[in-house]
Amino acid sequence: MPIPINEILVAVILLNFFILGTSRLGTCIMAVASQGILLALLPPLVHGVNGHSVLLSVGALSIKGVVIPWLLFRAIRRVRIRREVEPRIGYIASLLLSALITTAAFLFADRLPLLPLHIHSFFIPVALSTLGAGFLLLITRRKAITQVLGYLVFENGIFIFGILLVEAMPLMVEAGVLLDMLVAIFVMGIVMNHINREFSTINTEHLSLLKE
Amino acid sequence: MTETISTFFIHLLLLFGLSPLLAGVIARTKALVAGRQGPPVTQLYRDIWKLFRKEMVISETTTWVFRAGPLVGFAVPILAALLVPFGAMHAPLSFTGDAILFVYLLALARFFTILAALDTGSSFEGMGAAREATFSALAEPAIFVAFIVLAHTSGSLTLSSMLRPGPGGELFHGPSSMSLLLVSFSLFIILLAENCRIPFDDPNTHLELTMIHEVMVLDHSGPDLGLILYGAALKLLLSSALVLNLVLPSSGNDLVDTLVFIAGLLLLAVCIGLVESAMARLRLIRIPQLLVGTTMLSFFALLLIVR
Image (cartoon, rainbow over all chains, first blue to last red; front, side):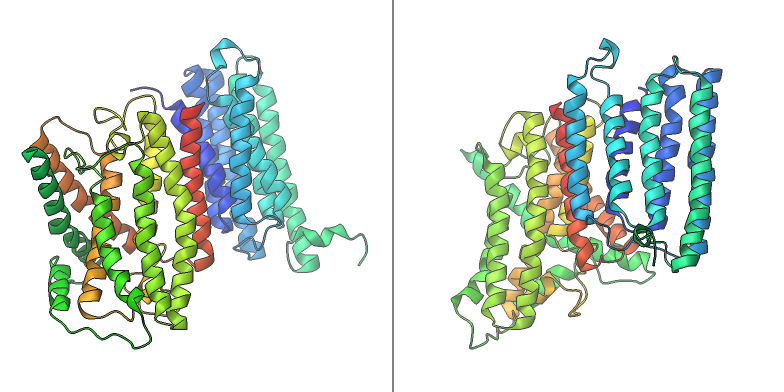
């Protein structure tokens, strides 16, 4: 049985497309959560089962796969929204853009001076295109919650990069990133509640004016 | 020579004999999932037979185009079917570039259906024609990108070898297995779109807001309607054959392979029935999104093998 690393990475990219193409927030959160769970499988698969990789995997699984989705689901229940309405760039356009980004990521990754070990691996292009998808979500969506999701996808991209560096990077760094993210989600949740109470919507466009 | 002629006949026999059965299997699966008895699986044969014996009512405002629509819609899938291998059975006709001809033959059939719908002068049918034109224009890139992937994997532009990229079972192990998996999946979605199945169109409703294909054939009656139903069944078998050729492994024994292919067709029909039972029809504005997503899927498959 070959190790399905490439299959997992392809699934991650397909999930990127899916997240960019869907308008239901619940489905989006589920997709981001499953992306996190898929990524959590990677460290033990790539580096073998040892204390370091298992700890990383369990940490990612519990935070990306369980805690954050739970917080986000609670948030959308509280502010009672289901859908992202009209993003700045439409769904079809963002799908096409993400295809462009993915192509560019694959082309770019082939030109990077990588270790011979990594030259044809999927890690670099997948990481780059996931970063791109995260950026695209952050930029184009109006609701605070989809922006949080974009941030999460972005972090997933960094995580994929990090997997290649697991041996060089102490666990503390990754743990720190995960913790930061958790705090960020908390803060976002609180901010969202405040925006919602102030404007009775969580559309971030209202934040562009300093005074009413 | 005799062998060529016999493949020709067996090919057409399989096409004509089996295609109405698929629609019956889909309807039966849906009925069983919904807890109903459902019509017998041979219902479409009876419907077509009944329609062929009926009288035809033709509106006075129509021209010859109205009559040509069903005829072309029936004849063209037969031509297209000659280019597609059915499992172990080779395609009777095969030449370089026939993949492109295949796509445009299907487009020709659609063009005439649309013209016939417009020819009635009914605004209702015009609306259906507009929808059909829009969605098929979006489905076409998806099918072309999928074909490019297949052409790249097989190194050839004939459908016979494109759909058989390896000695069989290539889908599950082999350097391009992942791309082929993605392509088979997107061909399945294209099958649903091209044959007006559920996430795209509901073949059972006759409601103004939901119809795409059904609305275009409202004015046809009698033998013409029978031809349309038969043509749609042929097209369903044709698109199923595209997917199945990729998915099914081959054992080397022609008889076994043909039987496996027929079983695969029925299984695929059951799958379509299950998809239709599980999903609701998409809102019209969501359909382009799904079709573009399908194109992206094939495009991504292309990216995976080209790099």
